Image (tube, rainbow, N blue to C red):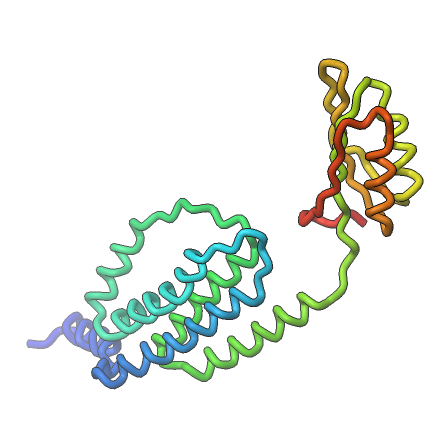
Length: 225
């Protein structure tokens, strides 16, 4: 005698076995995922301009796309395996902190592409790659406020800050002292400046009798308006 429970169980399992996991379909899905993963690899290398390029992270992006595709194909092929995989993946913990927002964008892009390719929706992956690449390129070219520089000065005497600030004021409309350090008759200053004449500022600071050393560095942090 077939009960409602048997009918529900049978229909539930059949709903998860409709995907044709033939070798041809699996190879096609992995082939499409590989093409998109390579595209993400080169897009990350070109669009990111970090000082310290992480090759290992970039290699992990296409690998993550292919792995996600395999997971989605497995979940679609069998309900029992999918439930077991969900339980297995739930115990995985990733403790590596991602500090760059763009790294997080590419990481999510790689995972989303793997899910889309595993579901057999290659046209959506094409649209996502085109729109996201265009979006990133356009936003990267939009002009923003000029990033300030960081001026680091070491000088003799506790009263040397006054002459240093006077030299800064001659070249900068905007400046702010970020740090002061006084020890053993020396003053160490960290000043955020915005100037059109960087070479002139550096020369005037270095020419002060009280200055021991000075450095003008680029600042990649938040822009102060």
